[in-house]
Length: 597
Image (cartoon, rainbow, N blue to C red; front, side):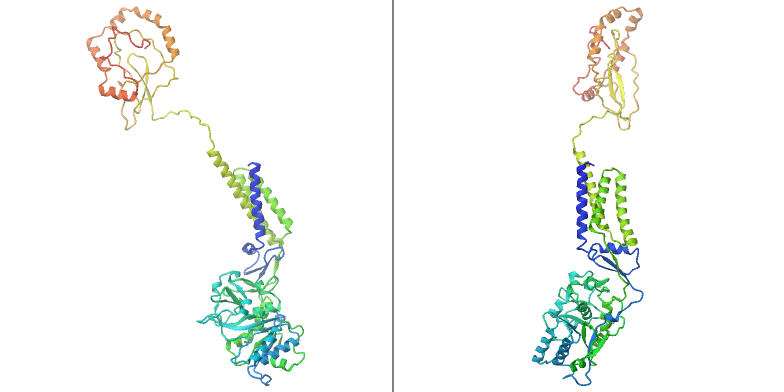
């Protein structure tokens, strides 16, 4: 391969490798490759996190033998009960009572609030509602919890749910398997503040009664809403909603470096949460009375939940599992510690790419099966190096970009070879006439004409061939005959192929053209031969005298029919047929045309 073609192979391979190397940073193409390689070194199920970049390399986690849930990740709970002491104005508490509880939380240093109790009343006081909204607006972040359902009349999704939801296109997996909702189960719910977030507490959906659901799809909306415990953990770790990465049937990542939760295809927890009590359970009445020291140090996110005895069964079950679910999500329950697979420095990865290009260009210069052996060895080195580096040394090499560059170089090399073969086929080549080979089906027979001495060529399969002009012809000097030769012609005619007719021996054939040199020699030796022929011996004179019967037989032998003469004329073409014995002039008086025989 020429230097120019090697340059094009190297250029195409380099562009393909660099494009793939850069594209893997912003896409998720390499994750299946990493998972497939890790299946040879770890037992499934495998939970992969990270992006495979230099800043966020791949991290592998497996299922833990014993699920561990840290109680330190459980929230501090403020319980709204039945108020046996009658501290609140009404039962259940009015908007004013809830406003007082939240105001005391702010006084004790709480910056965030997660209200799992539904803030909805049948006939609330407008002034009290306004005061409650003002208190909620003083928090840096407020997370509301509301039950959702699916009804015949869908509602527009509230803005608080929109801010705490994900687009369906940002979720990996079949979104149609998620539970579907289209309305809020309780009317006139208050969502205070422009930055307030809302998540569902319970779902009125079949098949999810004994499972903890974290995701739901709003019907006729391109949004997937989140559960209240999930939003509460995000608020506690100060993680944005947009940083969540969901892979249905695999994991739910709360962000870079955040917790990871194994989920199934329907967005539910794979492992049931382990029962863990809350870090502190404070009655709401104690906040109204303003008792000091009721919260532990660094309480973090404080959750206000509904523990009233007249609440629904679903609400009671949710309140009992709230601390356990939040602790399970925040502590990566059921997962082993993560193993990180860092990448090499960029300069070392580029050096590996340059070495591969040199090998590729060198292999392109080789022809035949040695080239394909070199390509196969290069691909094997890339795959084997990737496998061994990840399994033995815990380093993730750029195997995918290297294989992409190798494939592009092989394709370009093959394309250039095909183009060269095509140009060779269409280039003008001087025509070389191959030598004529004998055809076994075409046999030639030499037939001498009567007393002419000229050789004729007849094709045994039917038809006649012109005599070769360059072939030497034997010249015979016969004596001057007075009568035709009466000896029978001994002609060996081979057996003809089936379907062909035997040519007639009497057919008139075209004589061969004598070379000019032969004619000159024959003329030179003509005079002595004639003088010798004039002296006849008595034996020769007697031989020349023929009976009338033999003359007639000879004439009959050499006189072809009219139909045969016409056929011979058609075969010979423009050459006129020779005259028969009847039409020929008297040989006794006229001299022969060809005295040379």
